[in-house]
Length: 391
Image (tube, rainbow, N blue to C red; front, side):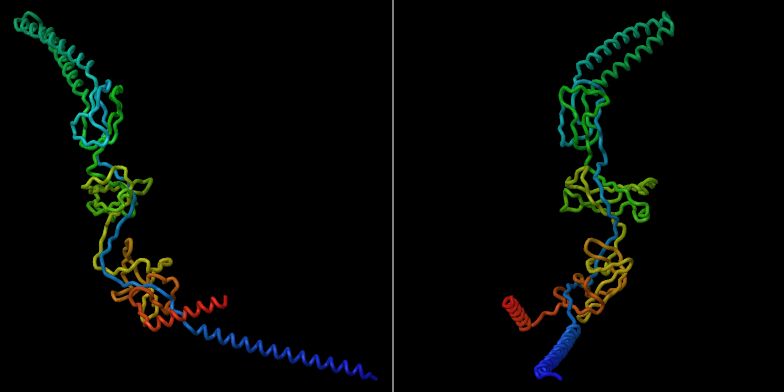
């Protein structure tokens, strides 16, 4: 039989167990209720659609060209390495680097002492032979000498006369002259230097015209034609574009590189370009006028497909397009857009078809009322104040 103390202890334990079970059930119900409220709140948030901020631009009409781009180094049409025709010591030179010369202008003078002595000796021998030939001719006419003797003297006279003329020519060659019109690009001698007939003394470059030579892949062969317009821009004159035209096209394709040579003549009336300048050029082989153009930044391309997002009734419409020619800023659209379309050109990577748009700049932007803007500003201020208080 239990004692009274034992019954009291059991009663207290049962009461405590019941209290624990009630507390657990209450906590479970509260947790379930809180989770249900959270789920309900998340569901409401999912139903609220967020507008994506974008910028837009209009479809325009304009002209666009198709071109082949390349890089090149400018070259001169004519360039001459001046080599003296006689050897000797340089007595003086007349022109310096950077000076313009005409064909025939004197460039340098070689000492002529030896050449003058050679000329005098040739002249003396020629006079002596002329006198002897005259006497022999008189005797031959009188038939006092044989014809063989007379003919032999004539040959010797002709030989000495040729030596005399050669000495005169070498004396004139001592003054080295410019073979072409151009500008002195290099002076390779100094006074007192010994030069010979195989040594270059000057380099002359003709700056007019200048050529840009490019090597075009053979697949472009059917696009490049004579007299097509070309535009050249060089790094040293990046603020200007120089016009040119296709002057020559090589008739053969290099089997090793698979390219053919194209020579462009560049127009440079002001003399701003120099041979050796590095530049970029385009050869324009086709041009279309009054065609549909859009900002090329608006286009999204993947594999062989291209599309844009058109802003329509505040939403984004995904529109597949067929593209054509492209330049630095615009791309031609052959199919898929019309003149009245407004396309998204910034923020389009975040869009899907039928996304809600918030046009912050460009055509289609809706100006908010001043009261709405003020309330938004106040709301932002309250949010900032709450955040600061919470912090």
